[in-house]
Image (cartoon, rainbow, N blue to C red):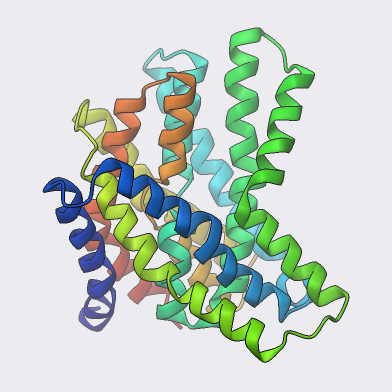
Length: 308
């Protein structure tokens, strides 16, 4: 485990560097927002497109992986909802808390860190995890919040979900890469170098952006946020482990990548949704802060445990 901790330390050190830059105002909130846009729309998209363009859908798709991850994540989501309802929270707030328990920072932390720790071939299972989160659970939170407020799901809600998926650069990059591969279009050396160089900025850029964004978060409702962080860092990967090791057993390598993905801290896009709908944004912000800080100690032993 010590070796895994040492290998993950540089990733968290870059997050810490970004936090220092944001905390000291060396990196302003505006600068952080633009860096996040660069990573989200360009660097990570280039990395995902390049990988997907060199594989076919048959090589990436794994129904058992999706089923195992979906089972564990749905169970964690349901547990988050149950705890919230036992505390007599309304449906929209319960939905936001469930999203914290079940959705990790796969895009900005998982892709750069796990692809380095497990090798580039880990991107295939990571992309399936990411796609499941975006297509299923990012859609589910919109449906539950709007349905809870309106009493029913409107056509406008479904339209909003569709536009959100079409406009998400990660989904677009993966889809475009698979189409490129399906039409057997060769990737020229200059294009490959371009994608490699641009995609290479994803790791330091994403990690630094995470740290800088954390510097602007306030810590409120520590007890609730602590439960959400515990649910995300411990309960979620444990349930996913049951899904991919017992119910829908995968090969050890794929199972390790999926469980490690589930062990990541609360995703930043949960805060964006909470802020957009005006539902417990400070609670979510604190959960992201606590879970990211605590993941320095929880992620390495989980990776050490699952590594084949």
